[in-house]
Length: 389
Image 1 (cartoon, rainbow, N blue to C red):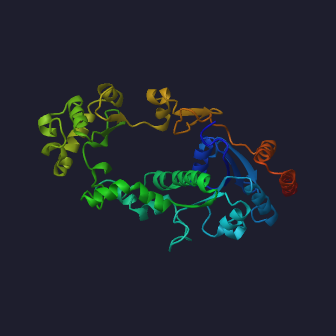
Image 2 (tube, rainbow, N blue to C red):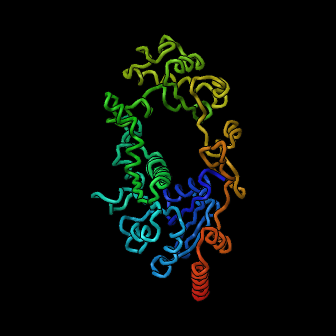
């Protein structure tokens, strides 16, 4: 099930954005074989690893790299997240793989990209979004920039960008019949996510001061507010009609807050944000979060409760849309986006079961000799493990 049903993808195991890309592709129907090093520990309940069959290979052993290349001949795509040059050194770089399968889409996930002065240096999400300008835009005025978890570099600007790029390359292959290399860099993806702000900067609405942009929490109408019970509400009343409803529902004085439009001097003037925000904060402290939810229920004031992950899974809207699913007793994110004709299947646990792996490779078209080679390598691993113990 899923729109990618029938596509065969090899995932070279890594962390963060790579597994996220594999989750996206496998959720939507692609058959993803995750190649791991010997002894790699895997959490079968981790959503980032779900829906995959796992195969352990020693990629420092030329014989086992040869097995990988045999499998490549039958795959539609492969992606890896090594530093530039590592896959080439091990013998399964783009040239090696495309020589065996000219229609292969070869995805490369890195922080800095395949070239440039920083290409070979280490980094993490926070470093990539720092260089892209994204991190500087996130934070409170007068305070340090705040890392937005690792959502911008690793996932939005990384794994999702790689998945999008690989699907684009697979679509193009349908016309040309040729594979190609997809260079997905987290710094590039982070810059792409800043497109709207680059446009705003061109119009004079810059993010050059931490916490100064109205979308960063500088404006009173786009921020979070603590409630009487120590919880929080999120306010995003950007448009005039929504701002007017916020003022009315919250019981605020329209003469002070600008009536029905934030475009009035009182509502929109950045010079008044610092004055109005404490007044709105004081009002939110008069009721609990649930009481405010009741006040704003069904309105267009663009106000919502700030939920924990546990609470989010139980929210009526998320429950109605089945936005969370349970896999072997563990709450996970449901596959997204949704498709009317080719819906995604319910996620399954990752498994390294050799019978299942053999069945998958047989389905791909790997010949008996290739499967025997894999079985022999598995037997060698078992002997080595017994000897070590």
